[in-house]
Image (cartoon, rainbow, N blue to C red; front, side, top):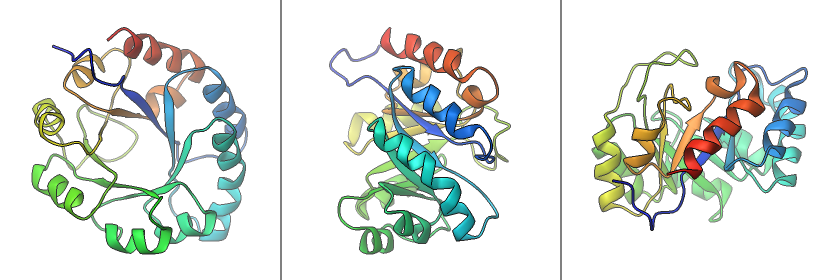
Length: 211
């Protein structure tokens, strides 16, 4: 059963790897569509910091204009350079303490915890602002080495106040069990960017607002 007192699940939007070309216009369309997108993760791979910063600048402005948190994936240094709203750390991307020291007390720091209660509790003890679990479904956005069970979301949301993000292959068609299990955020990428981004966000919004 869903909890009527629980805050509505929000969308944590993750960029595709290619954020050049017309991508800023696509992001603007999504954030103007009125869906419950509260965070955007800038996720690029294999670029040196200056090139990444140039690509990030217009996207960061769009997010700021729509009051959407701009989160940098993996790189504490790039997050600091951009004065981003936060950073998302994988298990090998540095510590929460290091990120907090470099980015300040107001930064949003998230940690990938795969399917592990232990990693999530460790992250919480270290001061993470949110934990991310997954993958819940097959995904083509990235290689999946770890999977998570929906029961993990029920466990976490029932015991801890630190928000949890569910990630991995989530679409409008399969998001309902994850939402009902207590996910505070659903992280989505391919389900939005691989087609009509506005239609996808509206489809997610319909599912989330009806819970």
